[in-house]
Length: 172
Image (cartoon, rainbow, N blue to C red):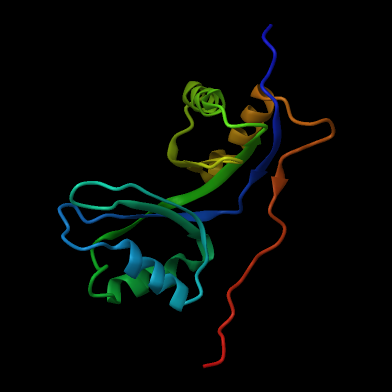
């Protein structure tokens, strides 16, 4: 048996709404007006990733599920965003913290998810964390599979976020 790769911890999100913002062949960017709109209405972005393409900048992000109907209405009323913002269902984010930067962690996690039929809608990496957006009804399973595949510190278990950071309006 091979030794498991060690990770520092694992975190599971609350239910989130998956949003894709994309305007094929656009001559204007949508990321800035989209983020500005959410900030103006104090909607937190739990996850965001984007890519640069020749003629567009696709964005994938997650917001709290409870904010979806508000954001749907706001984007339908917004002249530049109307028709380019798509809501793609309830998801969750599973994040784990490798000891060091190593592509083996991402590859192993993707293999584990693929072997078990867990669709990864988006992923992001940083020097300290790897995050995967999966269907919310499979989030617990995704966390369990990672716990089985990696070595967590002794007495550690997957964490659920138990606090929320909310924006407050500043007096003008």
